[in-house]
Amino acid sequence: MYKKLLLFVFISMSASVMLNAQTAIANEKEIEAVKSVVQNMFNAMKKGDTLALKQCFSSTAIFQTIVSKPYEVVVQNGSVQDFLISVAKQPAGSLDERIEFETVKTNKELAIVWTPYQFYYKDKYSHRGVNSFQLVQLKEGWKIQYLIDTRYK
Image (cartoon, rainbow, N blue to C red; front, top):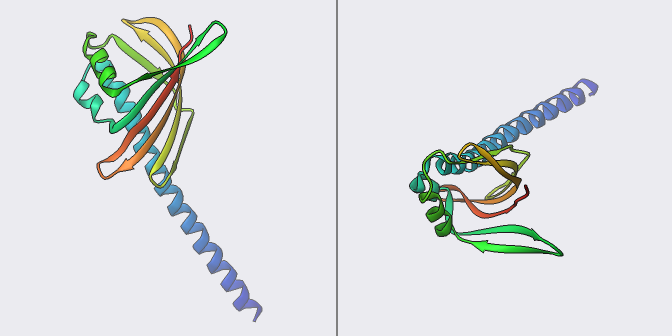
């Protein structure tokens, strides 16, 4: 009886370990897919490739920037279209946002990404801040739904 109990416990634990490993691998693939969309956005921005840039966003994406002013904080609204127009006006290579993936989490069709950054314009430091992304997994794949950022000197 004792041997049967030990065998059952061993098999149960082995199955649990395998299931956890499979879940971790699947989650790691999702995290890499999400990070890829965010990195593709910054690569397209740097290249001035507005077609590739547009592909990173859902059709209903929201843009916001937090601006600190004396005695108040203001949230400015933008749009994907405004962003594309702004990027299209710049020479390729002039917009260089260097990010660090600090936090990436996924849960089924929702993901969050937190990226501190330093922004360089024409190879000169401009400002720094943090980007906060919300992504959704649509039938076309992961898309940026919401982007809000901070900007500091």
